[in-house]
Every structure is written in structure tokens, then in C-alpha cells.
Image (cartoon, rainbow, N blue to C red):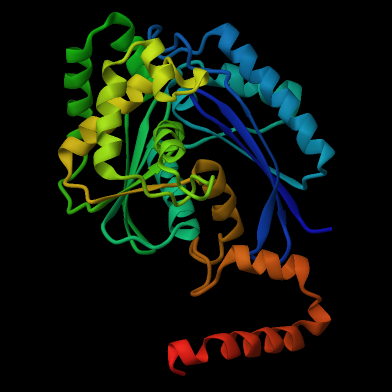
Amino acid sequence: MAKRVAVIDIGSNSVRMVVYEKTSRFAFHILHEAKSRVRISENAYQNDGNLQEIPMQRAFDALKDFLSIISSFKARKILCVATSALRDAPNQKDFINRVRNHLGLNIKVIDGQREAYIGAVACINLLPQQRNALSIDIGGGSTEFSLIDKQIITSNISVNLGTVRLKELFFDKDDIEGAKIYVDSQLKQLDEANISTIIGIGGTFRAISNVILNKSGYPIDKLHSYEPNYDEFQSLLKKIVKSDEDELKNLGIKNSRLDVIKPGAFILLRVFEKFKIEKLLTSGAGVREGVFLTDLLRNSNDRFPPNYNTSLRYILDSHIDNHAYANQLCKVSKMLFDLMHEELKI
């Protein structure tokens, strides 16, 4: 049986789990995905970052369910990481020890720079190469940025900006001006750079891209690698920030995101103000994929070999008989040549 690996990502807003199956050295596919919106950071930012008992219990219950699912798939390895909510919490050990003692699960709390890097690893390996790109991952408690030039990650930074954090500190109090001052002060940590492309990771960016995709007549119902129009995206951000709950629903925002989409849109607007952006690219991959890839590619500098496509390799692994591989490849190559040589003048 091919090796199966499970990844759990404990974020401020949601806990997510995915089970991967390897079909060869660098090829894999997803067996199962699950998500639970436990909001472990609920009311934490109003209490000096301390995790509260009810949200911790919700997260504990979700992890228990996920471990049962992982067991059913007979995964041989579990990689569990936690991000902003736990790394900010003075009482993080209470939750970590409870999970380890009662569920047997070890949680690794990663710092912000590592979180940014892991998300960027997913981008450079699973998206078309980009020049002068900035990946942005808006979470519940923090936002991570990475500068990417083709397959090179040049810098990583994490700032204390997140949808739940802004909601509890500013938006619940209708203090938009205070939110603007706070967001801009955090964004000062970003160096001035020649950024032409924003790569959006995370729920906020995907939710807004999804609204545009659904109204655009886009022929593929797939967000990964989707390029929304910049002007349309920015216009939608401005509408979201000014909308009430009913208006958000009419715009196409899902119920699960109604209370955090405005802070997320607000952060994106301030980022757009800071850089001259020409292109937007939506990533369906993020921290979970990055955690898996940094484990899979740990001896390959966190990158696939040159000209390697893991999706094509998975198709070959799954559908082509290895014993007849050479003959089949030769046959397909000749068919492609016969079809294309005149058009390509070869």
C-alpha cells in the first residue's frame, strides 16, 4: 500500500484535516478532506490572548473526530501544526497537554515566519511560476506574506492582522478608523518592493474570488489558479466593507463567513493601497499542502525536480501499466506528433 500521511492545521478560525496518499516518490493525491469551524480564538483577543474553555473544547472535539477519520484511512504519519491563536496564547500549554494526554496527538506550534514560508512552498510547487509576486494568507489571528520570484522565496513575514482579531478589537465596536490605523501600522513591517502579482491564500481571498468566479461564466468550477480581474476584485472589496449582513448575502458571501469577511476585505484593501498590483492569482493550496510538501520534499530543498509535474506523475502512476510504460509512451508520442507536426512546423 502506498504511504498515507494526514495533516491537521489548527487555525484561529477553523481546524482542517487532509489525508494524502503517495503513489510514487513525489506523486500523491488527496484521499479525504475535512474542516470544522471551531474558532478556537473566540474571545481570546479581549482576554490578553488567553484561549477560552468553550472554544478549546470545540477544538478538542474536532480533533478527536479527525483522528477517528485518519485511523479509518490507516494513515502512517500525522503532521499537526497550530498557528496564530495558539502561538499567541499564554495558556497554550493547557490545550496542547490536554490533546497530547487524552488523544495522543502532538501539536507543533509554528512561528509566523515558518507559517509564511510553508504557505509559499505550496505556491511555488503547485501554481504556475510568477515573477515579483507577494503571497498573502489572511488568517483569524495573523496574516503572512512571502516574496516569491519564480521558484525562489526571498523573504517571509507575519504580522498581527487577522479577521477574528480585527473583528473583536475594532469591527465589533464599529471602530473603522481605529482598524485603519492599526492595519496600516502593522503593514509598515512590509518592505517596499516591486510587486506585480498578489497570490491569495486562505479563506478570505478564496471567498471573494469565488463570488467573482460564480458571476463570470468561468468555464471551470475550480478556484485553484483562478485569476480574478483586479478592478472587479477591488470594487467588491469596497462593497463588502460597507455592507450589512443582508447585503453581504446578496453579494454572494456564504453564511459561515459573514462575520469575518469585512475585516478580511479591509486588510486586503489596505494591502492593495500599498502596492501597485497588476495581477491577482488565487491559490487553493496553503498551509496544509505546505506542511505535507516540506515533509515530502525535505531532501529536495522543498521543491519538485525541474520540469516535474506531480499531477501528471499521479495520472501515470494510476492509469499506466509500468511494465508497458515505454511502449505506451512511445505510442502516445507518435500520435501527438502526427496530430501537431504540421501546425508546429516540425
